[in-house]
Image 1 (tube, rainbow, N blue to C red):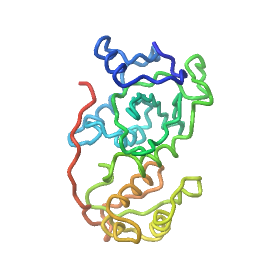
Image 2: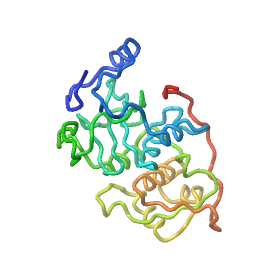
Image 3: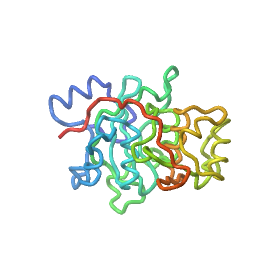
Image 4: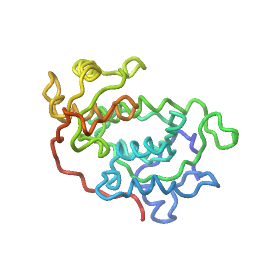
Length: 248
């Protein structure tokens, strides 16, 4: 059993072999938590939800919506990165910081599996399963980075359909980076309520980059989605990915 504060990482082949042979991930778990909350599992398995196909950003969004902690095993650079998110506390735990690949950045990150959290958030009264303080980091910058630079190129399922969007705040005030056209788009979204197709026509943006920005704003609680607004328009459509990961 591997400790969550161990900075060494599994190779993907070794991780998958262990799961095949033992049915275990190799990481210590909380004895009182053996299954994910029913509401979260239902969301992840919901029909036509990209989270059910292993979309990392959709899974992070589901955890945010339900404010439920979870352990995500991410495949990145040939290694397995255990990432425990604590939406209620606004932090995540990782024994090593997830760094972009020099060639692909974060676009090649894949979700291998999701489990109940194997440790507790900082400050919990049951201190024996709280990890090292240095391994807890603010969650918002991670969500922001995954939305802007990760694998997902389309709107999150929660945001799609006929809608207009408005920014509730400017995340740059909290230290989140939005250079160039992204910063200008946020300023315009603070003033106006507009659909995705209009945002995509703004200077320096196309549909993908505009969708990424809306996803990022949503994940840091800085986006208003309006379905009945006069400016609401259907989103541009695209094909969904097809891959599975959640055990039934």
